[in-house]
Length: 496
Image (cartoon, rainbow, N blue to C red; front, side):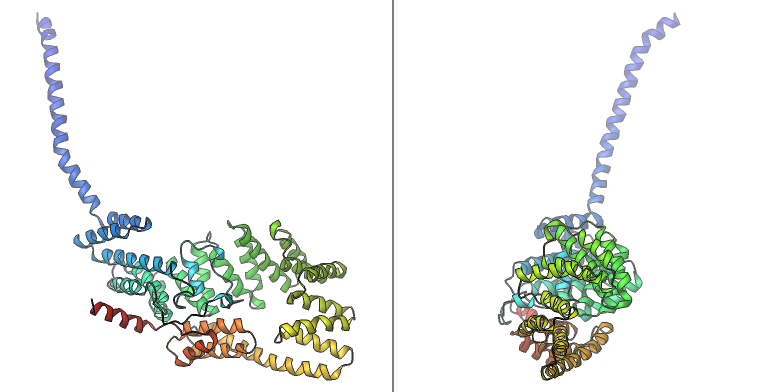
């Protein structure tokens, strides 16, 4: 009987318990909804969330949305994060305006090498400025500099936001790097260095700081500190190809640096490079191997150059130089003759072929090529030296003496330039030394003169002698000083 009653009650109890469990679950869900909403509101109000969302908006090119997140950061009490976000917005706007500005580049405060630290820059985004620093001069449009400069107001506003972040703040490191970028873009590289050096002392693994210091020192042609920070950049990001080539160019500037340059080029070639970039690096490596008379390996390096670039005169001439070094003069001569047939005025080919003629005791043939070369390049030191030897060989002492006089004058200038180079390599802020190098080069190599006056202005932008020489060499007024930008910006703000 009891068993029958239990069987009758069991379905009823099961139904009651099920209803109670369901009610409990509903109650739990009802109670959980406010907690979930509160959790979501807490998560979406955190500084990291708001900062990331603001950065994503900027990456999409939506500064208005980014500003909304900056305002939310400020309202939540994340003042430093808000300053950094607002500064990034101003900086992004400045970059957009600069990219759309007409040539020439609005102000030389942004030097060519600085572009290599921008996220989208590839290996070819900067030239080998330490080897051929005047690369841009022939294509610059000589316009007066008094025209409106794009992006300056945004850069100054960005700098003002970054300057609000205190040194002991968790956001200080990022604000410092961003502020230094603004300073470099405004032509005040020395102030940028002064804020970055303490930062890398506190944070030796701060990649962005080392990248901007590398660019600053390359822009003033200070090889020693540039190499130090390029080396750190490589250490911290071994997969980035951008710092390798400049580092190798600095290293191969002296015989002691050849081994490290060769090693650097080989590491660079292991990275993901475009065919044109690979060809350039292989050419640089082959030149360095030839400098140490490693002709067999130089030939192997040249053989790796992508096929589309194999027939370029520079690559073929390097191959001829290797063959000559290996005593294969017939093949070297054949290549040089082919190049001159296609490019009769190519200076490097004229000099190379003339030297072969001298080695084969054919001075008259050498003289014909060398006279053609110095007629087009009167300050070509190697050509003058070879021409002097050729004249002596044929017994023309008068012309040999004339060439020796020119060679001695050129050598005197070269010697002084080497002395100045040793000074500027160590001291990034010695503007007078860079100015002297510019003036010395003005009578020898105009592109080098333009490069050195740019180095001088980046080093000492307030020096009136440098600014005057800039006008004489470049043909238009130098960029205004940072304080001039700031005064103009203040007057504009006061009038609003």
